[in-house]
Every structure is written in structure tokens, then in C-alpha cells.
Length: 336
Image 1 (cartoon, rainbow, N blue to C red):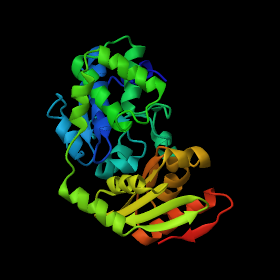
Image 2: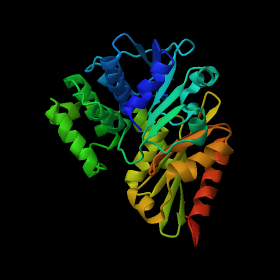
Image 3: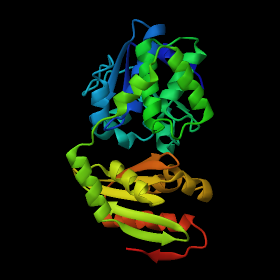
Image 4: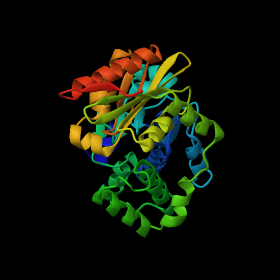
């Protein structure tokens, strides 16, 4: 899939306004990939109006990055009047929160640019879906567009792409050789790696620390074969809490929470668990769990999320059932 296929769709619709949408609580990969992609679009179509729209706010770290990059975002994007809608780092419509219905009702073509496992419903709606699960981040997918078109990113564009990649690879801990090559090329484009990486370091907020500790205290541990599965719940920072529980020693962490009448579940696993069991959290667990909860789920092999309806206990129990079904020769024991 190429950048030219995107511009072809925009030409066919005589697009004047394109809206780029990021998932709720947009992280640095979503925000930075949207910024870099907007810049590339404007390079070839300078008269095109392009908005970066937020479904439901952005993360604290993304807000911090906006102080160092000239990224303009719209909290109420003009979806109704858009000639094309492009979803970046967003593989399920459910991740658009209140904008989901507007996107579904829009007659504008939908284009998906992502590095998560594609979701069937989103693929069915999309006129074009460009997804690369081998890429470390959506920023890496967007950088490939720059290479396809022989456009050298500016210093700010390169910095944004670098930050998105660094964030999604946990400061390059899970980067592969292709990603490291991309990072080297971005450094050659003017990115000071050490200085730029420091932008991703923020002191943890008091409320996030409390959420992590509460989630750890409430954790129920289940052993299946030699794998330790941890299930917990907390009202906010589910993803952060899941990461913390993995760092404490669990192979799988599932943390749920309810907000505004909806159920949100974050799932994390170690790379060892994925490698030895071949269980893909996004495809094998989050997707069916999202369907069971009358919502949507998806994500990476070791990091995924679910949004739906129901109570926390039901969601966690069904998640455990899905994991049991995927793990053969189950020897189940409750550890706590």
C-alpha cells in the first residue's frame, strides 16, 4: 500500500477538507504521526485544508510534547463537512468515542493508517486500509510514506516521528533492526537523539502512582501451567497499572475500570509469553472480548485494549476464560 493510493482517493473526491482522527487519550505515536502525515499531505497539496482531530483528549505526555512541536489539534473536528476521514493509530471506531457515530454516518471515504492488527468492522468501513503489524509504530508507517515519495522530513517532522517511535518502542527496548535504521535516518535529518528523548520523561503524577498501587493491591493471581496471570481493577490509569503489574513479575496483566457507564480493559503481556504461546492479545483476546462486551477490542501482540458495556467482574472472568481456552494442557491454580 502506498501514499499514492491515498492521494488518488483525495483526487477522486476533489477533497478540500481532510480530517485526521486520533484515538481517545491520544498518545505521542498518534499525535506525532498525524502531524507528520499532515505535513506530507500539505507538501503535495498545499491548498488542502487538513485538521488533526482528537476523539477525546490526549495524554499528559502528548500535551507536554505540544509545547515543543508546532502541532495544532481540534477538540471538535469538522467531521460532518470533511471530504475524507483518515484514522491514524486507531484500529477500531469505538476508540473515537462520541465521534464514532459521526464517522459511521459520514459519506466521506475512510482511510486507516495503523500498525495494529486490523479490525474486521473497521476494514469493512474503510475504502483503504494501510496497516503494517511489523512496524513499531504508526510513525514508522508514516515515515515510509516520506521515503516512498522521496521527501526529506523537516527537523520538526523528523523530531515528531522520532518521538512517536521512541514512545511506542519504550525508548527502543522493543525496536527491531528496521526501526533502528529508521531512527538513524531521522537523526541524520537533524534530530538530537539524547535531547529529544528527554522530552518523553515526565514525573509520574500522584494520582497515577495511587492507581498503580491500588491495582497491585487488588490483584488476583491465577497460574496456568507456568504462566502467572494477574487480574485487577482501578478507576483510572488502567494501562499504566497493567504495565506496573507486568514489571512486578506477571506474565499477563489485565486491568479493568468503569468510566461514564462504559467498561475499559487494558491488557499487557511479556514478550516471552507471546513468543512461547503465540497468543496475540489484540487478535486472540481483545477482539473477542470486545465483541462479548458489545463493544470493540484490538491492539498489538503484547498490548491491547477493550471498550464495551458490562461490569468489571464479568469482563475479567470472560477474559480469563479466553486465555484458558488458548492455553493448552491447562493446569490452573489460584495464587491469590
